[in-house]
Image (cartoon, rainbow, N blue to C red):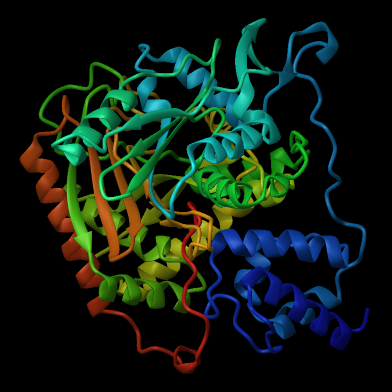
Length: 530
């Protein structure tokens, strides 16, 4: 394929990834609305079309079709890693019950076994407000169809020879319906009922690992609570479920055939581990965070939440800052978190934990399940560095983390063997994640629409978790903190400082380049990990 032909082919692939009618050869992928997750999806699409290995780093460094074509033109075809099932860990799968699980799922399962039974931390909660006159029977039928389409939603996990095995059952939990229309304090009662359901953990060995509740409210309003165990669901799964539920409600045939279980693709684990050795060794020292007591128990058994709002104007500026550095909104937010932690602790070596969605690499873009990897982001934060220098560093680290996310976190820990402290995660103390607002679009005649997103929990997996949640009027910070380790006023000060650091970051960017003046589609939203 000649370079001009390759450029035109890449234009079509860029347009598909960006959901645009067309793009020009000089269109910057990130300025046009791309981020690290959509870059991962684009890299896989280019691999399949061109036949050479393409990394997120390639798109980060050559962000337009013409630049990427020039970068790829000299590469030899046939270097793509083949997709093949992973080798059994012990003996042939036929001799053990169920199916082997992915490395990331295995790590999550092992974390639960090491815990104290507070499995509520592993619940993925989502509350959606409905639009349109809902027919309970149609909604139940649409939900039943989705449960049968996605085997992850009917999976339980059993132990065999000390390892988890996945068993797909025929059990489909029914839709629970609660009528609050005659209740004097319907909204307060709704909040209480949601809290009650969040407090009930899932049992991975018996299932079912999903629960769905329809709340019928006054004035023809209604809400839908989706709860799932993290072993079978992640943040992107919630968006997939909401979108497909609306489509199935309108047309049961839209459910589609059952989704195949994604293949475990082989990857160059040693090359990935070499990357992490360079980044993480020697290991970062534990941050001297302002805890008010010793870490004697696992983090997250009881948590509080400090809340701060980030308005639409600030969110737009954060998005623009991220785009200038070929990144999504997560990158400047993570930079602000790093600065916050550096200011609180006096440390310049800051390591954050964050999730990476690996669906594109697994060929599972529309599959419900647990398809994320935990990765560390190690950053050097110094006062003399400009905001743009810090944001650029976070962007670079994020790209490399996505490209080397094929190593499960427990495998990474075992290979690098960092010192372990009681009650602390290896490599990082603080978790950072950004969650999109779910919006299925306008409500069609006779149909329904769903809007909302994740809701906070009273238990967690980490001692400090900066969770940024998009909503209709901007973004909300939930700083979830372990109440056994942090005083409420300490958490409030950290949340306030984060907001101050966001303002400081935005007050000190480099002058925007000429690309900032281009007119492009509005930012379409972060997908869990950008």
